[in-house]
Amino acid sequence: MKVLFVSGELAPFAKVGGLADVAAALPPALFELGADIRIIIPRYGIIDSGKYPMEKILSGIEVEFKGEKNKINLFQAVLPGGSVMVYLIENERYLSKGGVYLSEDASSCGNEAEFERFGFFTVSVLEILKNLEWQPQIIHCNDWHTGLLPLLAPKNFRTITTIHNLAYQGRYREEIVLSALDKDKKIFHPKDGHIIALREAILNSGLINTVSLAYAKEILTEEFGCGLEKDLETRKKDLSGILNGLDINLFNPETDTDIFRNFSVNNISAREENKARLQKILGFAEDKNIPIFGFVGRLTEQKGFDILIPALEEMLGENTQIVILGSGDKNYEEKLTAFARKNFAAKISLNFKFDTGLAQKIYSGSDFFLVPSRFEPCGLIQMIAMRYGAVPIARRTGGLRDTVINYIEPDGNGIVFEKYDIKDLLEALKKAMEIYQEKEKLLILRKNGMAVDFSWRKSAMKYFELYQKLIFTR
Image (tube, rainbow, N blue to C red; front, side, top):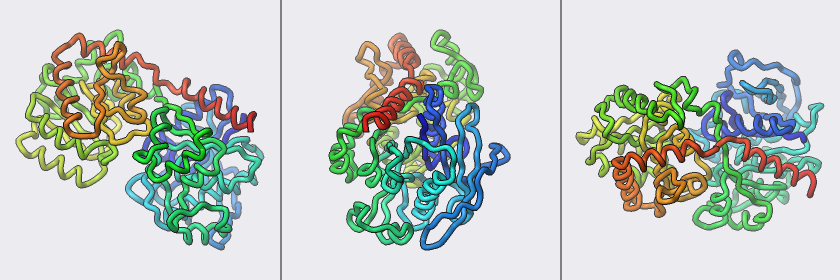
């Protein structure tokens, strides 16, 4: 089974968000199951060719774009730590300057320069396939970056698109797309004067899946469908949900070199040293009786900051410590900074950056982990937190619904709240404070979370089955 996995991001070569982690973890799991799977990404300027050795295997291939002939080169590398082949397309004009995105994040700004990058990447992939001896049976597309591939790919290729976040769609004015690709407007499905890359993927892919069972159901509704729910409804029989996995070798408290002391579910008392030393480096009072609430991720409305900030301000009046690591919306950074100045400096640590080492220390030292998302296609931080013994406080939505089980259940591993409002979140936070005083109950939640199998193998088997369905039943 030959599969080309097409992605706009790939860890560790070029990582911005969770897509990069999925692209780095799912193909190796599929490779182990027997798939001949290869990954293709742009060769961005930020990719360190000294750190990641690569060989040029094709050069001077012509690509028609915007009425001009552009030349691309193809490089080949191996995904670090494994055997999966990675192709990288080089073009100085459109692909190989700077980082992954022209905007601050992966949300798609929708401007012409962005389409030039990912539209050019799309047509370049198709030209590469004309010149490559190895030919896939399946093209596996991911998110809006590759949304036009299922429409433009020759019919001898079977296509599947994974939606990692439906809110990010790649929405471009018709004239931008039509002039760049020189295609008949009739092949597209314009909406409100725009061609939406992810919509084209939904309407043209052989199969569609998203990154959790719950999210696959939610996106069929107006609340979560982001304007594409009617298109998804037409493809309902071809839509499925497969929960993302976790790189359990990377996120392993028994071997992690970024934490202060290694531990396991059978030696969970050793975890206390991580908490004590985290308190010390953050400038907190070193007191095992004070619970630490952690957050790692983007500071955005999606992640719940419009309800989290007022709830935290009330919680800081209690005997608590809160650590936040991440960057994003400057408005949220300013609000957090403002109330931290209100005599709360000794109780809250704000770190507006991303620091992998500090993230691991927060996972391994926090008692509770904050995941109050407005919506969450899958979410990885709750899985990582549980693997390191931190109890998630999560809203029941998307992938959080599929992974976090409320404390009242026999196999409970977290604290779950239903409504997206400050009142429900505050009740969940106060319940966490109560549970913290009940050490046996807290220990059970920790152990239940650490015992869950979040490895990629189970999910990879489901992708393998989708590939088989594409090849053998269509």
